[in-house]
Length: 312
Ligand code: BEZ
Ligand code: FE
Image (cartoon, rainbow, N blue to C red):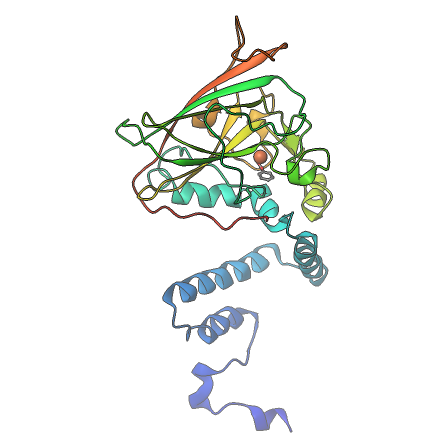
């Protein structure tokens, strides 16, 4: 068959996917996708294609670079499994997770938000824990921490019955699912706020830690001469029907890396006041230094929905 035989009749050119040159490819692809019945899919796919094509044009992407990019994407998939989510890590490391968080929380992104990225380590079924109990479930080094928190609505009224998930890395810098030396669900717990909107628990003061660097995101960070550390923090997820689920983190104020979080999660609002304990410790077995954190969370009326857990 000759090229002439397959050339479209002039009246079919508008619907044709035959590419004439570099300039025409974007419009042709967008037109080919226009049949999607879901309008939001149509909008997202079209914008994605336009921006990807514009990106390739802007940097004049070479074929070698294209191959490297595809290899990078493949390696993100290959590095991910039930206990590790490299795709979220990548999104976090390029600030994309924080951007999406800021777009969807706070006053339509206009003000500093009380939310922060979920990260790759939230697990859905952390153990229900009574107020005042400890989330230290296996021997864990570090100064004791006594956290006293309150959840209120935007008018300052206490919110009772909020389920608050708490999770953190050990002072060794690993979440329990990354560390054979910690028991299942160590440093994780789910609390329920009382009539005054309060929940409180014991833990250990978190330490900063490096995000996993043994995969493609680690390669990227090294190539960009970036350190892999997150400043010390606790994660919180507040859930109550009728209120927008609050996903956030509270950062330790004396951490030297607050200004250079590798995943861009820190806002000033989220820097907690971790006060060194003075006088008699709140528990008899505390012999060394200890800290107290007081923090107030605000949850707005809205839709309560849980994110998809990044790991099992
Ligand atoms: C975390 O805080 O758990 C986290 C967030 C982003 C990347 C890696 C870890
Ligand atoms: Fe974390």
